[in-house]
Image: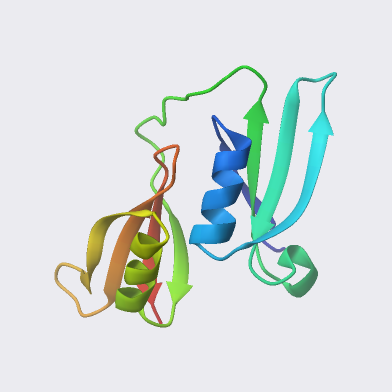
Length: 128
């Protein structure tokens, strides 16, 4: 088996595509419009996504729904980065929101940081 994608419901598809591509550096892999079913999809990821073994994020916009309650069960998406400090600086310079600056995880030495996407989803950056 292979992890293919994680789906996030978003309130503004263009805004989310901009965040994941321009601010996080992912590629827009493909889009799908389903006007009869009243939703639009955009798949983003690094590299070529599933084509090269990378998991993708499916951004789903349900027409007319501009905000969601995230719930208490959702945690975060994690991305491996080579330098969490430099990645945070680049994200802030691009207009992204860093909600936990890069530094060691409590009780350990792994360097992590957190950013938040425009819909409030948390993304952990783990220095590798």
